[in-house]
Image (cartoon, rainbow, N blue to C red; front, side, top):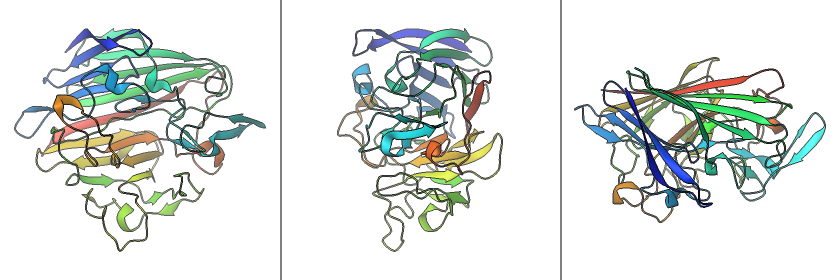
Length: 347
């Protein structure tokens, strides 16, 4: 039920970076940086009522420089676009190739490296902060002047809510997500292999060797079947399945149903923390931090492979190049609105 603002550091181009700390009635807190709109810290209680920081990150701004996506608001297009190009109404737009021959998370200077403008804050029972950014026409070669607002709020029921709003003066693509790296133990030097995950998705989008969707939608099978729930590490290192995991999960799941609904639930048995993910997006990307950088994170803990998992609500990867994938363009005169909620509890 409070909002605190303090200086966090200085960006690579010399701008002040601020941290906004939202605390709810139960004492849980969310720390958001205006640099990349990053979730820097997220303190949630365990089954004994002890608060723990459940997202990875860095103690200083320098750790977030460059193409580190931890906790960031991603755009203009989250995930990958194949061959770094797409065609819209007969015009082909060639994008920045920052992932081999493909475009990833908006390009080299995506939204994760911007300092966003604070436009409002609400210090009530559900504290919230709203930030804005204007992405000019042909920014990273995406068409349309895109006016974006993102609101983070923290409810008394320990729900982290993220609301995305956008308007454009030209028809364009927009695929926002947040790239928080979760570890529900609250211990940043531990792995997440014992976290029990359920994903309400009976299908997924298979990919090629460069992680670009083939255009097919197939039923989940073998290690990709989380419909009944299982530990993240259960099938990750198995040698008898036909799906190549490349050291862990990095897959888009096609969430069953439509509208705002439960996408996934993660349960960490040691701490008792439960995280449910709700969204109106059609897909969710599971990523298990398969190749951690050789650097130190928060609290003096070294980043480690499989030390976190991401659940990124999204349109399917490469949707602009796959007309059969569910996708909504941003068009003049119509506001794009999407919301994702991470709801925390214990058992």
